Length: 286
Ligand code: ATR
Image 1 (cartoon, rainbow, N blue to C red):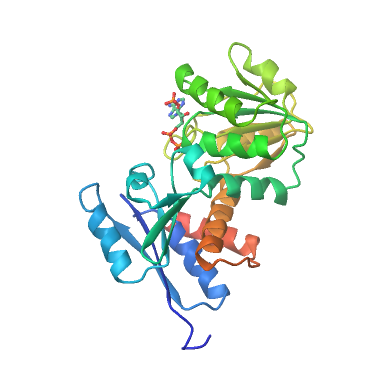
Image 2 (cartoon, rainbow, N blue to C red; image 1 turned 60 degrees about the vertical axis):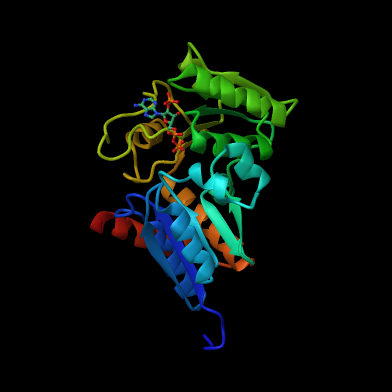
């Protein structure tokens, strides 16, 4: 580490940030890359957001993460937005360069990277996604971009699912995108990949699940984006029925890695297993 190297100033904005894991993740990545820098938590509300952004510009920040409740609100402050973030309609990563704010969404890239790491085949396959919110938009976008041919979406609020289905059909003509209605069990049977993008099963409602699996799931990949708890009921039941499961911790790590790549404008190696251990410990301590 040389003292001439610029200090990378990063942050996360949101409210509340008490249990945010991104600071632990990003500080560890910066340390492992021997980069001088910091990643601070900046809690702010709608009224103080613009003042925070002015300060970031004045003080030469490289970028920041955005979380609840500002992922959509931040759009009005951006000078530019990446096409994928625009499709998702929410931004979780902002690069600050020459006083200009550019918005990205790395949730989908993180999801895609975790599929690749676990060698999940996607080309020509069928997938079922639970949920139609921001996370679902990111996941569905990447499933289709990765070659999924038939996509089924199940959601509590049908209108929201139809809105997403219309957008996906416009963006990916030639793919089959349908609302999964009556027989979810039959759709599970026909799917190679099943993903929960809803918050159902998240702490403290650990015993909730978006779907109670009834059949064997051998050869299928079941993925949950929830990372607290790491092993949700959805994943526990899928695993017990023979599925290969992927938890939300990997997606959390990969979305953070993608954000840091955007800020540093370079690719880098990282140790996924030690980051998993670190984040599990941090979650336990929080
Ligand atoms: P995010 O940006 O994290 O995806 P979101 O946009 O609020 O958050 O979306 C949350 C998703 O979880 C939605 O699909 C929501 O279903 P609705 O569209 O019907 O609201 C789903 N969800 C949240 N709580 C739920 C619950 N108790 N039962 C079923 N679905 C739920």
